Image (cartoon, rainbow, N blue to C red; front, side, top):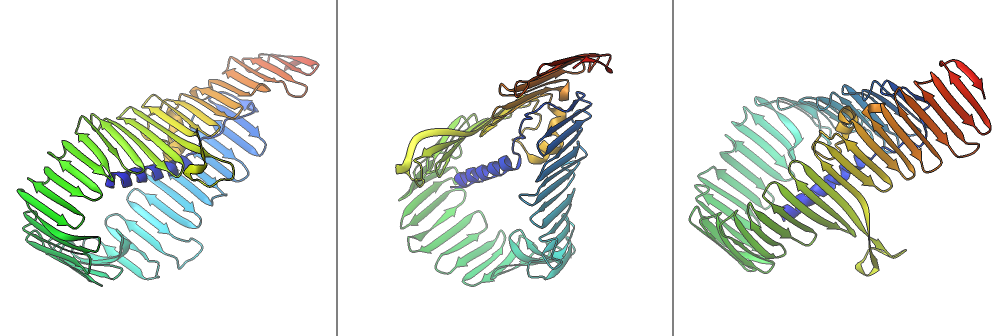
Length: 488
């Protein structure tokens, strides 16, 4: 189950990164000014795009979005639709994020968060990790701490509040109705709450009780540990005498350990399991089907996640199924990563049930990377091919904003009928829009633009105007020595 939760977490994080790093659309029109790597300007409807100094300077302005970058020093992206503003300063050294009123600032180990910048009474934190902590929690209570000397910290590590004096000498924490006192943490600890009691003098003795649920004990940990469960569906008890023997006998399952954790034999209503010895041979059936011959090969299958590995940790494969979608990932460390998301088509107007699926499979997105050389991405009608790819992970948003263009020597982008290619930040550039228009240039030697729509246009230049030609409809003209124009 831990592997399944881990795979699900990976899936959610990958989906968030994909949304945060959406592929930039290809230009559909020729640049209004093209000076290769020195500078280029595009205007398309309400969108204006400017690049200068190769990959260093970039600015994009459109109706509801804006982006500016002086790489790698500064990058700023604004999305008015989502109410999000992101700033990077020599990432990962410093950054700022504003999202729907919440603001987070970070400089190295300094971190500041304000839940609502329009509300002076909202929760806020000013932390210099792991030394200085001060702020105000959701209830409006203020706190301050100088670690490890003295202080109180609220809403940290899932706890409501923590108070300490000369940590680890003494600390006190609260979470909901649980109250914990620690002396020389982690040696001595006592926790009380509604139906809960825990006490330990580590490693000599410890007990943990929850009413109508369980009672756990240890003596000279890890030599002796025991447990008794009181759940209606699974009750009984067991023990482990480390490193010799262990036995757990519950109403719905039973386990034996020999030389724990190396040999384990488990039989239950939902799962049968054998380790002989762990981690080299692992087998299970039931809710989780697994066979590991570690580190050579292994496979694991549950209701929604199937995975296998070979030559651990070099080669991995996952298949994750969620509500009509299937995500497949292949990882060959450290060089290859491949991901594909598929969707099963539904009958028109039908709910997402097995009976209403047509069986036709549509590939929603595909991504692969051969690090550090090349990557390819397709999402809906958008495609991108890029060389080089020095960042080993998939499209990390701050890396895309501040760093990726610095090492991208070639890039191809397409969006529907629009496509563009660029080599060495504009030394070579080619753009097309279906069969209606195209533009290509080899800076500064030659550039050409052709449009078939309307009256039609054909324009070309040698050395940016030393010699040029333009034909628009029935009108033709020549350009000589940059300033002399004949005809047209």
